[in-house]
Amino acid sequence: MAIDAPSRHQGYIDLHCHILPGIDDGAENLEMALEMAQMAVDHGTSAIMATPHIIPGVFNNTLSAIRKRAEAFRIELKKAQINLTIYSAAEIRLSPEVVTLARKGELPFFNQPDHPREDGKNFVLLELPHQSVPVGSDNLVSWLVSRDIVPIIAHPERNTAIQANQDLLRPFMKIGCLVNLTAGSFLGGFGPTAKKTASDLLQRGWGHILASDAHNLENRTPILDTAVDAVSHIVGPQQALSMVTTIPEFLI
Ligand SMILES: [Fe+2]
Image (cartoon, rainbow, N blue to C red; front, side, top):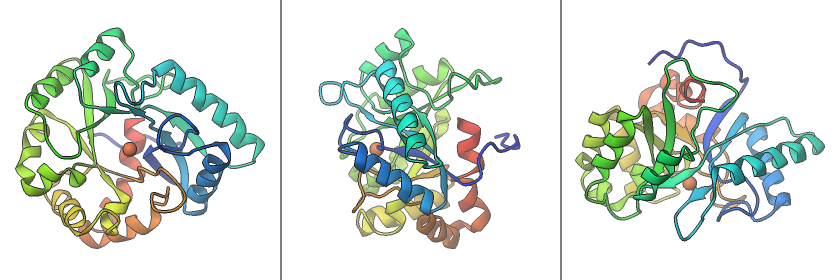
């Protein structure tokens, strides 16, 4: 992929983070969200893609509501003098509703409205259920790709079916999906199996972005630097760094 565009960012770009307050199971309130923002900045992050859950019937967040919340949070960051860029998208559960949202033009994409892409592609963060890869998922993903909507599969290393059989991810890779691995997985935060699977997927070339998937200030933090170190030991510093800099930049 062409990732030689000039950088708009000075630090890491975290493309998966539940930092918007009170909108899902991430930051509980503004105070926590601001502390998460400061923590991210303290560890070298300069931009965060706020990706609240869209899970039909559980978190019914909409594109317009997410954008409004992101704008309100930008104002709060400015007031608090925290130098962090906030973009917004969502983490969408892979379900038939994805098709409905796509048809209505209401899928939140990584690329931002003020930065239209020349290649016409749209990138969307999709989450599989935790224990399975539902039958027909690859058809749904193909349907999206045929409409220039490229899914980024969130944390497959934490899916128990993929942990047992990594080849379940192959159809998604063949279609052209990208993969988001979680920073904490490389540090053992999701257990030894997720850690090993993350490393295996990365070495198969099935890991494109490294993101925090932060939810709080304790066990699911917005810290990337330690994971970049861990990933450097697996694929080298250049590739590790690209997963939090040039590749995310290309997707925004
Ligand atoms: Fe997430």
